[in-house]
Each structure stands twice: as structure tokens, then as C-alpha cells.
Image (cartoon, rainbow, N blue to C red):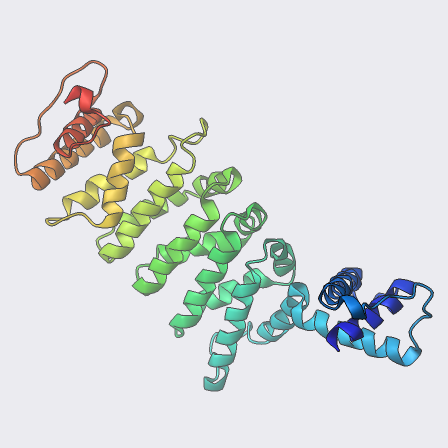
Length: 357
């Protein structure tokens, strides 16, 4: 029956292109594709009862046309991401003017926020979302200090929208939202769990997109991240995540001659401070940063003071791990940091530097 109904629609639709603009043309085209496929599948499954379309079939009656257009219009409104965005934004904007929510509204706003996050997976919706006041919605979510779940959802909206989406990254860096993120990050009075989540938005916005990186350094974002990382007021997990994000951002520009060295001084300073504060094993974040230092930074790429602090930190780290003095392998081919790296890899049996061990 399903196939017969759609074949009827296909025959009628094929004989008169129906669209008065109330339903986007792509949905009529999609209907044509569905009915064509359905007819072919039915005929393949029922070779003795094949359905044939009479190309001379007359147009649909007014009643049938009205019904079909109504059905498709309902389908568009319930499945088209742009249409759904219209509805979600219309609902959220009603709450955007208040910092305090009624008890019964919190769950509604949370549900709308999660639906909005799902929609922001569609990269081409970023522009429309921005034009509709979407960034003001995100700012409101980030500022809901009494509702941690809403703040987390606001962070996730940004991450979902900006990850590998240059259009969205461009829109964010041109909006006051970008500076607001760093204002919140640098405010030690903000909840640590929120700031930990918010750090992920910096990574999503800045990584792998040169204009975003330039905007980041242009507002001294790297210096602000440094302060987040080394401030004794911050929890260790927040500090270490800030440091790792600096390294991961730098890593994505390692093949960019104009930008590859821009963060190395800051990363070196941060590692030297953070590693000196730990007596036990490194966290995963510090291990990641150390790998970046040893594989991507030469001592001539940092200042003399930073080089001295780094060598001290790396020597202490090796001694802590292997409980014996660091061995040096002098060579004019390698500077101090690479000597440390040679020592480390020799001890761990790496093949990369085996010729020098």
C-alpha cells in the first residue's frame, strides 16, 4: 500500500511541478526521489504486479494538492534544521533577558539548549544562528552562574559550533563573546568545573585557523592562558588543561612559518613553573607538554631565562623518574634541550635517537 500511494504521488507530481513557494523545492525533489526509488523497489519485488506511471496522468485535485502540501509543510517544519532553529531560537530568546530563571523554566531552557547544541553540528547554520542573536544566547548561558548545567551546555554549544568550522570561528572572534570567554577564564572566583569546561572552547575556536590564532594573540589570549596556568589560585586540573591547550594550539601551527614559534616562549615558561610544583608523577597534560617541548622546541627559540628554567625543570624531571643524574651526549649538532631528549629516549629504549646513545 505504501508503494502504491507514493507511486500515485509520483505520477501526479511528475505531471505537474507543484510548488507555490510554501514548501522549499528541494523537498519536492526529495519526494520525487523517494517515489522513484519506491516504485523501482516494488517492481523488483513484484515482477508480475509492476506499477506503471501514466505520464499523461492529470494533475492532482485541489483537495489532494492541499493535503500533500500540508503534509510536506509539516515535514519541513519538523525535520529541516533551519526551521527547527527558528523555533528553538524563538523560545530561547524569551528567556535571554533575565539572569534568574523560575524553577519550572530551568528544565525547559536546558532542553532547548541541548536541542540547539545538536543543531549547531550543521556547520552551515552558524551564520543564521549568529544573525538571530545566537551569540547573545550563548553569553547568557555562560553567565548563568547559579545553573552549572546551563553553563556547561553553553560551553558545549561553542565547541560543537566552532570545531573545524572556519566560518563559525570567524564569527566568534569578531564578536564580544570572544573577549568575554577570557574575562571568565581569568576570574578566579568563577567555578573551577565551569572554567575547566570553558577552556575547551578556546581550543575549538583557535586551533587550525590562522585568523583565529591571530585574533587570539592579538588580545593577548596566550598571556591570559599563561596566567590561568600558573596562578596558585587555580586548581591543578584547570592549570594543567590551560597549559596543554596552549601546546595543542601551537602544535596545529607547527608547519606555519609565521606562527609556529609564537607560543613557544609561553609554553616553556608554563611548563617550568608547573613541573616544579609536582613531587609525584606528571599528569597526562604535563606529559603531553613535555613531549611537545622535546620534539618541537629548540633552545634558541626561547629566551635565555626560559631556557635556563626549562633545563632545570627537565633535569629534575629525569632525575625524579630515573633516580640518577642526567647523562649528557655533547655534540655541536644538538643544543641543551635535545641533549636532555637524547638522555630520556636512551633510557626508555627509543629507536629515534639510538644512534647517539
